[in-house]
Structures are given as structure tokens and as C-alpha cells.
Image (cartoon, rainbow, N blue to C red):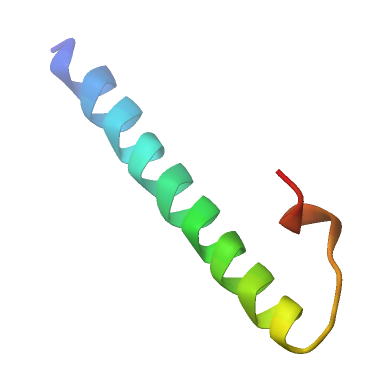
Length: 42
């Protein structure tokens, strides 16, 4: 039954990675529009 926790952890990790990639994509759009966002700095 412990595998359920592992699945949730992996799922959360995937969501986090997808979220970060989404933020980076928004940052790229912002730079094209000359719009600076604090989330773009890393």
C-alpha cells in the first residue's frame, strides 16, 4: 500500500516540472513583449 504515496510524489513532481516549464514559457512571451516579471529571474 506504500506505493500509493510514491505515485502521489511522482505525480506532484511531474506537475511541478510542468508548472515550471509553463512559467518559463510565459517568461519567454513576456520578454518578447518587453514585459519584465519577477518569476523570470532564476
